[in-house]
Length: 369
Image (cartoon, rainbow, N blue to C red):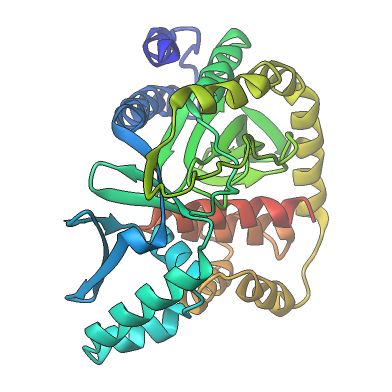
Protein backbone atom coordinates (compact mmCIF):
# COMPACT_ATOMS: atom_id res chain seq x y z
CA UNK A 1 0.00 0.00 0.00
CA UNK A 2 1.44 3.38 -1.00
CA UNK A 3 -0.39 5.05 1.89
CA UNK A 4 1.50 2.80 4.29
CA UNK A 5 4.73 4.65 3.50
CA UNK A 6 2.98 8.02 3.45
CA UNK A 7 1.95 7.66 7.08
CA UNK A 8 5.61 7.67 8.07
CA UNK A 9 6.19 11.17 6.67
CA UNK A 10 3.60 13.03 8.73
CA UNK A 11 5.30 15.96 10.43
CA UNK A 12 4.46 16.36 14.09
CA UNK A 13 6.55 19.53 14.41
CA UNK A 14 3.48 21.53 13.38
CA UNK A 15 2.18 20.96 16.94
CA UNK A 16 3.89 23.54 19.10
CA UNK A 17 4.34 22.14 22.60
CA UNK A 18 2.90 24.94 24.77
CA UNK A 19 0.92 23.01 27.42
CA UNK A 20 0.45 19.42 28.67
CA UNK A 21 -2.56 18.83 26.41
CA UNK A 22 -0.59 19.63 23.29
CA UNK A 23 2.29 17.47 24.53
CA UNK A 24 -0.15 14.62 24.92
CA UNK A 25 -1.53 15.23 21.43
CA UNK A 26 2.00 15.07 20.02
CA UNK A 27 2.54 11.76 21.82
CA UNK A 28 -0.76 10.40 20.47
CA UNK A 29 0.33 11.26 16.94
CA UNK A 30 3.70 9.55 17.30
CA UNK A 31 2.18 6.37 18.70
CA UNK A 32 -0.56 6.51 16.07
CA UNK A 33 1.93 6.40 13.21
CA UNK A 34 3.53 3.26 14.63
CA UNK A 35 0.17 1.56 15.31
CA UNK A 36 -1.23 2.20 11.85
CA UNK A 37 1.99 1.28 10.09
CA UNK A 38 2.17 -2.07 11.93
CA UNK A 39 -1.48 -2.89 11.20
CA UNK A 40 -1.19 -2.03 7.51
CA UNK A 41 1.79 -4.36 7.21
CA UNK A 42 -0.24 -7.15 8.85
CA UNK A 43 -3.22 -6.55 6.59
CA UNK A 44 -1.05 -6.35 3.48
CA UNK A 45 0.53 -9.70 4.37
CA UNK A 46 -2.92 -11.17 4.94
CA UNK A 47 -4.09 -9.98 1.52
CA UNK A 48 -1.02 -11.59 -0.06
CA UNK A 49 -1.61 -15.08 1.32
CA UNK A 50 -5.43 -15.09 1.45
CA UNK A 51 -7.39 -17.34 -0.88
CA UNK A 52 -11.08 -17.69 -1.76
CA UNK A 53 -12.28 -21.21 -2.37
CA UNK A 54 -15.77 -22.46 -3.26
CA UNK A 55 -16.25 -25.92 -1.78
CA UNK A 56 -19.02 -28.50 -2.01
CA UNK A 57 -20.12 -29.85 1.39
CA UNK A 58 -19.25 -33.41 0.34
CA UNK A 59 -15.58 -32.34 0.19
CA UNK A 60 -15.55 -31.31 3.88
CA UNK A 61 -15.13 -33.49 6.96
CA UNK A 62 -14.82 -32.36 10.56
CA UNK A 63 -12.26 -33.16 13.24
CA UNK A 64 -13.29 -32.37 16.82
CA UNK A 65 -10.73 -32.69 19.60
CA UNK A 66 -9.38 -30.71 22.55
CA UNK A 67 -12.39 -28.35 22.54
CA UNK A 68 -11.58 -27.42 18.96
CA UNK A 69 -13.42 -27.89 15.67
CA UNK A 70 -11.34 -28.22 12.51
CA UNK A 71 -12.79 -28.57 9.01
CA UNK A 72 -10.81 -31.10 6.97
CA UNK A 73 -10.50 -30.55 3.21
CA UNK A 74 -8.42 -32.89 1.05
CA UNK A 75 -6.86 -34.37 4.19
CA UNK A 76 -5.74 -30.96 5.47
CA UNK A 77 -7.17 -29.68 8.77
CA UNK A 78 -7.90 -25.95 9.03
CA UNK A 79 -8.27 -23.75 12.10
CA UNK A 80 -11.27 -21.46 12.64
CA UNK A 81 -11.57 -18.07 14.29
CA UNK A 82 -14.37 -17.56 16.82
CA UNK A 83 -16.16 -15.62 14.10
CA UNK A 84 -15.87 -18.24 11.34
CA UNK A 85 -16.75 -21.04 13.75
CA UNK A 86 -19.93 -19.15 14.62
CA UNK A 87 -20.70 -18.78 10.91
CA UNK A 88 -20.12 -22.49 10.33
CA UNK A 89 -22.38 -23.56 13.21
CA UNK A 90 -25.05 -21.07 12.21
CA UNK A 91 -25.15 -22.32 8.62
CA UNK A 92 -25.33 -25.91 9.81
CA UNK A 93 -28.19 -25.01 12.16
CA UNK A 94 -26.31 -26.08 15.28
CA UNK A 95 -26.62 -23.75 18.31
CA UNK A 96 -23.19 -22.66 19.55
CA UNK A 97 -24.10 -23.54 23.15
CA UNK A 98 -25.07 -27.06 22.09
CA UNK A 99 -21.76 -27.51 20.25
CA UNK A 100 -19.85 -26.24 23.29
CA UNK A 101 -21.79 -28.61 25.56
CA UNK A 102 -20.89 -31.61 23.39
CA UNK A 103 -17.21 -30.62 23.49
CA UNK A 104 -17.38 -30.17 27.28
CA UNK A 105 -18.83 -33.70 27.53
CA UNK A 106 -16.14 -34.95 25.12
CA UNK A 107 -18.84 -36.12 22.68
CA UNK A 108 -16.49 -35.24 19.85
CA UNK A 109 -17.64 -37.92 17.42
CA UNK A 110 -21.29 -36.99 17.93
CA UNK A 111 -20.57 -33.32 17.16
CA UNK A 112 -18.45 -34.27 14.14
CA UNK A 113 -21.26 -36.42 12.68
CA UNK A 114 -23.87 -33.72 13.28
CA UNK A 115 -21.70 -31.09 11.59
CA UNK A 116 -21.10 -33.29 8.57
CA UNK A 117 -24.73 -34.33 8.13
CA UNK A 118 -26.28 -30.90 8.64
CA UNK A 119 -23.67 -29.07 6.56
CA UNK A 120 -24.28 -31.46 3.67
CA UNK A 121 -28.02 -30.81 3.81
CA UNK A 122 -28.02 -27.04 4.26
CA UNK A 123 -25.34 -25.97 1.77
CA UNK A 124 -26.37 -27.64 -1.50
CA UNK A 125 -25.15 -24.63 -3.45
CA UNK A 126 -21.64 -24.83 -2.02
CA UNK A 127 -19.72 -22.93 0.64
CA UNK A 128 -17.42 -19.94 0.04
CA UNK A 129 -14.36 -20.17 2.29
CA UNK A 130 -11.94 -17.29 2.81
CA UNK A 131 -8.76 -18.74 4.24
CA UNK A 132 -5.55 -17.12 5.38
CA UNK A 133 -2.84 -19.74 5.47
CA UNK A 134 -4.25 -22.62 7.50
CA UNK A 135 -6.98 -20.52 9.13
CA UNK A 136 -10.47 -20.10 7.72
CA UNK A 137 -11.59 -16.56 8.59
CA UNK A 138 -14.84 -16.59 6.59
CA UNK A 139 -17.38 -19.45 6.24
CA UNK A 140 -19.78 -17.88 3.79
CA UNK A 141 -22.70 -18.48 1.50
CA UNK A 142 -21.90 -18.48 -2.23
CA UNK A 143 -24.26 -15.48 -2.35
CA UNK A 144 -21.79 -13.46 -0.25
CA UNK A 145 -20.82 -10.27 -2.05
CA UNK A 146 -17.05 -10.26 -2.02
CA UNK A 147 -15.06 -7.09 -1.38
CA UNK A 148 -11.36 -6.42 -0.98
CA UNK A 149 -10.61 -3.72 1.56
CA UNK A 150 -7.15 -2.70 0.26
CA UNK A 151 -8.11 -0.03 -2.35
CA UNK A 152 -10.80 1.34 -0.04
CA UNK A 153 -8.29 1.78 2.78
CA UNK A 154 -5.83 3.34 0.34
CA UNK A 155 -8.39 5.94 -0.73
CA UNK A 156 -9.40 6.66 2.87
CA UNK A 157 -5.84 7.19 4.13
CA UNK A 158 -4.82 9.26 1.10
CA UNK A 159 -7.72 11.70 1.40
CA UNK A 160 -7.35 12.06 5.18
CA UNK A 161 -3.65 12.87 4.80
CA UNK A 162 -4.51 15.46 2.14
CA UNK A 163 -6.86 17.07 4.68
CA UNK A 164 -4.00 17.15 7.24
CA UNK A 165 -5.44 14.38 9.40
CA UNK A 166 -2.82 12.10 10.97
CA UNK A 167 -2.80 8.36 11.86
CA UNK A 168 -4.25 7.32 15.19
CA UNK A 169 -4.87 3.57 15.21
CA UNK A 170 -5.05 0.42 13.13
CA UNK A 171 -6.71 -2.87 14.08
CA UNK A 172 -6.95 -6.25 12.38
CA UNK A 173 -9.49 -8.48 14.14
CA UNK A 174 -11.08 -11.87 13.49
CA UNK A 175 -13.38 -10.44 10.85
CA UNK A 176 -12.84 -6.72 10.32
CA UNK A 177 -10.26 -4.00 9.86
CA UNK A 178 -10.19 -0.52 11.34
CA UNK A 179 -8.13 2.49 10.33
CA UNK A 180 -8.52 5.64 12.42
CA UNK A 181 -7.22 9.13 11.62
CA UNK A 182 -7.40 12.22 13.82
CA UNK A 183 -7.41 15.95 13.28
CA UNK A 184 -4.32 17.38 15.05
CA UNK A 185 -6.38 19.96 16.91
CA UNK A 186 -7.72 20.12 20.46
CA UNK A 187 -11.40 21.03 20.88
CA UNK A 188 -13.26 22.15 24.03
CA UNK A 189 -16.96 21.34 23.42
CA UNK A 190 -17.64 21.57 27.15
CA UNK A 191 -15.70 23.90 29.52
CA UNK A 192 -12.75 21.94 30.87
CA UNK A 193 -13.37 18.95 28.58
CA UNK A 194 -10.73 18.62 25.85
CA UNK A 195 -11.24 16.21 22.95
CA UNK A 196 -9.83 15.28 19.57
CA UNK A 197 -12.03 14.44 16.60
CA UNK A 198 -11.29 12.21 13.66
CA UNK A 199 -12.58 9.64 11.21
CA UNK A 200 -12.60 5.85 11.33
CA UNK A 201 -12.94 3.36 8.50
CA UNK A 202 -14.27 -0.04 9.54
CA UNK A 203 -14.71 -2.76 6.95
CA UNK A 204 -14.34 -6.49 6.63
CA UNK A 205 -13.87 -9.23 4.07
CA UNK A 206 -15.31 -12.07 6.16
CA UNK A 207 -19.03 -11.36 6.51
CA UNK A 208 -21.04 -9.49 9.18
CA UNK A 209 -19.28 -6.15 8.63
CA UNK A 210 -20.43 -3.62 6.08
CA UNK A 211 -18.27 -0.69 5.08
CA UNK A 212 -18.55 2.20 7.54
CA UNK A 213 -16.84 5.56 7.75
CA UNK A 214 -17.53 6.82 11.24
CA UNK A 215 -16.71 9.84 13.32
CA UNK A 216 -14.21 9.41 16.13
CA UNK A 217 -14.04 11.25 19.44
CA UNK A 218 -11.07 10.91 21.82
CA UNK A 219 -11.16 12.48 25.28
CA UNK A 220 -7.58 13.63 25.76
CA UNK A 221 -7.36 13.37 29.56
CA UNK A 222 -7.77 9.58 29.68
CA UNK A 223 -7.84 8.66 25.98
CA UNK A 224 -11.38 7.25 26.15
CA UNK A 225 -12.47 6.57 22.58
CA UNK A 226 -15.95 6.61 21.04
CA UNK A 227 -16.65 5.69 17.42
CA UNK A 228 -19.89 5.90 15.47
CA UNK A 229 -22.24 8.01 13.34
CA UNK A 230 -21.73 6.21 10.05
CA UNK A 231 -21.10 8.76 7.29
CA UNK A 232 -21.27 6.15 4.59
CA UNK A 233 -24.19 3.97 3.60
CA UNK A 234 -23.66 0.34 4.56
CA UNK A 235 -23.02 -1.78 1.49
CA UNK A 236 -21.55 -5.04 0.26
CA UNK A 237 -20.08 -5.43 -3.17
CA UNK A 238 -19.82 -8.25 -5.66
CA UNK A 239 -21.95 -10.94 -7.19
CA UNK A 240 -23.01 -14.50 -6.58
CA UNK A 241 -20.56 -17.21 -7.53
CA UNK A 242 -22.04 -20.24 -9.34
CA UNK A 243 -20.37 -23.65 -9.09
CA UNK A 244 -20.31 -25.82 -12.16
CA UNK A 245 -21.65 -29.36 -12.33
CA UNK A 246 -19.21 -31.75 -10.69
CA UNK A 247 -17.00 -29.03 -9.22
CA UNK A 248 -15.98 -29.60 -5.60
CA UNK A 249 -13.30 -26.97 -4.93
CA UNK A 250 -12.80 -23.84 -7.06
CA UNK A 251 -10.37 -20.94 -6.33
CA UNK A 252 -11.99 -17.56 -7.05
CA UNK A 253 -10.16 -15.08 -9.26
CA UNK A 254 -8.88 -11.85 -7.74
CA UNK A 255 -9.89 -10.13 -10.98
CA UNK A 256 -13.54 -10.83 -10.21
CA UNK A 257 -13.22 -9.17 -6.81
CA UNK A 258 -11.30 -6.14 -8.17
CA UNK A 259 -14.07 -5.21 -10.60
CA UNK A 260 -16.47 -4.90 -7.65
CA UNK A 261 -14.16 -2.98 -5.33
CA UNK A 262 -13.10 -0.31 -7.82
CA UNK A 263 -16.69 0.91 -8.05
CA UNK A 264 -16.62 2.23 -4.47
CA UNK A 265 -13.12 3.56 -3.80
CA UNK A 266 -13.75 6.85 -5.61
CA UNK A 267 -16.69 7.64 -3.32
CA UNK A 268 -14.44 7.68 -0.23
CA UNK A 269 -13.08 11.15 -1.02
CA UNK A 270 -16.52 12.78 -0.90
CA UNK A 271 -17.29 11.17 2.46
CA UNK A 272 -14.00 12.27 4.04
CA UNK A 273 -14.45 15.79 2.64
CA UNK A 274 -17.78 16.04 4.46
CA UNK A 275 -16.23 15.14 7.82
CA UNK A 276 -15.70 18.75 8.92
CA UNK A 277 -19.42 19.47 8.95
CA UNK A 278 -20.13 16.22 10.77
CA UNK A 279 -17.50 17.04 13.39
CA UNK A 280 -19.36 20.27 14.16
CA UNK A 281 -22.49 18.20 14.74
CA UNK A 282 -20.63 15.86 17.08
CA UNK A 283 -19.23 18.81 19.03
CA UNK A 284 -22.80 20.00 19.58
CA UNK A 285 -23.90 16.48 20.61
CA UNK A 286 -21.18 16.34 23.28
CA UNK A 287 -22.33 19.68 24.66
CA UNK A 288 -25.92 18.39 24.66
CA UNK A 289 -24.94 15.11 26.35
CA UNK A 290 -23.12 17.04 29.09
CA UNK A 291 -26.35 18.92 29.81
CA UNK A 292 -28.60 15.83 29.76
CA UNK A 293 -28.95 14.54 33.30
CA UNK A 294 -29.57 10.84 33.95
CA UNK A 295 -31.92 9.93 36.78
CA UNK A 296 -31.48 6.17 36.72
CA UNK A 297 -29.16 4.64 34.09
CA UNK A 298 -30.67 1.14 34.55
CA UNK A 299 -32.58 1.32 31.26
CA UNK A 300 -29.34 2.12 29.44
CA UNK A 301 -27.58 -0.85 31.07
CA UNK A 302 -30.52 -3.06 30.04
CA UNK A 303 -30.22 -1.83 26.46
CA UNK A 304 -26.52 -2.70 26.40
CA UNK A 305 -27.33 -6.24 27.52
CA UNK A 306 -29.99 -6.56 24.80
CA UNK A 307 -27.39 -5.50 22.24
CA UNK A 308 -25.16 -8.40 23.23
CA UNK A 309 -22.77 -6.73 25.70
CA UNK A 310 -21.72 -9.31 28.30
CA UNK A 311 -23.16 -9.03 31.81
CA UNK A 312 -19.75 -8.66 33.45
CA UNK A 313 -18.85 -5.84 31.06
CA UNK A 314 -22.08 -3.98 31.85
CA UNK A 315 -21.28 -4.38 35.56
CA UNK A 316 -17.85 -2.83 34.96
CA UNK A 317 -19.51 0.12 33.17
CA UNK A 318 -21.88 0.60 36.11
CA UNK A 319 -18.97 0.50 38.58
CA UNK A 320 -17.01 3.04 36.53
CA UNK A 321 -19.98 5.40 36.21
CA UNK A 322 -20.52 5.24 40.00
CA UNK A 323 -16.93 6.23 40.78
CA UNK A 324 -16.54 9.29 43.03
CA UNK A 325 -16.91 12.56 41.14
CA UNK A 326 -13.39 13.57 42.17
CA UNK A 327 -11.86 10.84 40.01
CA UNK A 328 -10.60 12.66 36.90
CA UNK A 329 -10.71 9.73 34.50
CA UNK A 330 -14.39 10.56 33.92
CA UNK A 331 -16.22 13.88 33.45
CA UNK A 332 -18.09 15.21 36.47
CA UNK A 333 -21.86 15.03 36.77
CA UNK A 334 -24.55 12.40 36.26
CA UNK A 335 -25.13 12.80 32.57
CA UNK A 336 -24.86 11.06 29.20
CA UNK A 337 -21.38 12.48 28.61
CA UNK A 338 -20.08 10.83 31.78
CA UNK A 339 -21.82 7.52 31.03
CA UNK A 340 -20.51 7.50 27.45
CA UNK A 341 -16.99 7.90 28.85
CA UNK A 342 -17.63 5.14 31.39
CA UNK A 343 -18.38 2.80 28.48
CA UNK A 344 -15.30 3.85 26.52
CA UNK A 345 -13.16 3.62 29.68
CA UNK A 346 -14.15 -0.03 30.11
CA UNK A 347 -13.53 -0.60 26.39
CA UNK A 348 -9.86 0.36 26.88
CA UNK A 349 -9.33 -2.63 29.15
CA UNK A 350 -11.11 -5.22 27.00
CA UNK A 351 -8.72 -7.76 25.50
CA UNK A 352 -10.71 -8.92 22.47
CA UNK A 353 -10.41 -6.31 19.73
CA UNK A 354 -13.85 -7.00 18.24
CA UNK A 355 -15.47 -6.53 21.65
CA UNK A 356 -13.45 -3.33 22.14
CA UNK A 357 -14.76 -1.91 18.86
CA UNK A 358 -18.34 -2.83 19.76
CA UNK A 359 -18.07 -1.00 23.10
CA UNK A 360 -16.54 2.09 21.49
CA UNK A 361 -19.50 2.19 19.12
CA UNK A 362 -21.92 1.91 22.04
CA UNK A 363 -20.17 4.88 23.67
CA UNK A 364 -20.84 6.94 20.55
CA UNK A 365 -24.40 5.65 20.21
CA UNK A 366 -25.14 7.09 23.65
CA UNK A 367 -23.84 10.53 22.62
CA UNK A 368 -25.97 10.50 19.49
CA UNK A 369 -29.13 9.17 21.14
